[in-house]
Length: 90
Length: 131
Image 1: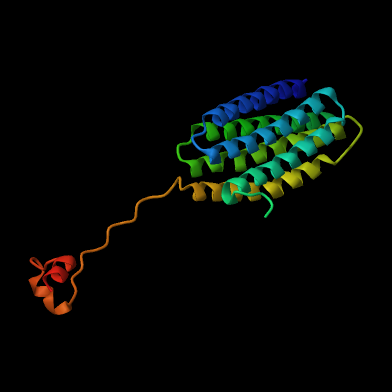
Image 2 (image 1 turned 120 degrees about the horizontal axis):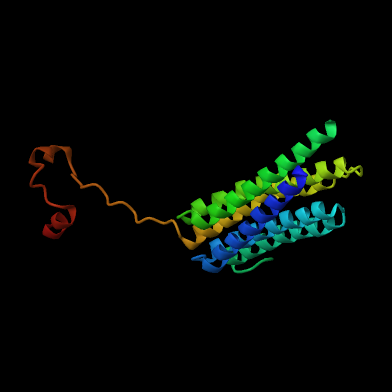
């Protein structure tokens, strides 16, 4: 029972933080803030997918979570390198 | 009895994870300087997601089918968060968002023997113009 309430709280907190990150993504003054917001967005998406997995009591969502984590890191590095050097693979 | 303790541990990990994720995003939204904004998500959000993944491991253990591959995601996130933070910091430096103007140089006194005429020592540029 206590796990159910904690799960509802965690769903609300992670969803709210996704919304706040989206606000920063739209508002962010320059590209550095937008890259940071995208990185945070992918990390929060991993948390949300894991929460869905806990709520459904299944292990199916693990692969989706690890793929989103890896793609988030790779895309963050790619965009940061593009802003830094004007090219991704030199 | 041990099942109750496990339930409490799962609930605590979920609540801590949700709180830290929320704190990271609030920091990302509310902090003023770009370099300060870098601090909030890279540390707080990573810890929050790690806590939620730990809750998932504990939940799988409590429900009778233990699986530990969430630890893989924890290790991956904890290794990659500093790397991406360093890249984003480099982007901030590259864009010059925290650049201040250089300080003005001190007044030039030229020679120690002229120290007694300290008040009316002319500037270096004026002396060169005179010469």
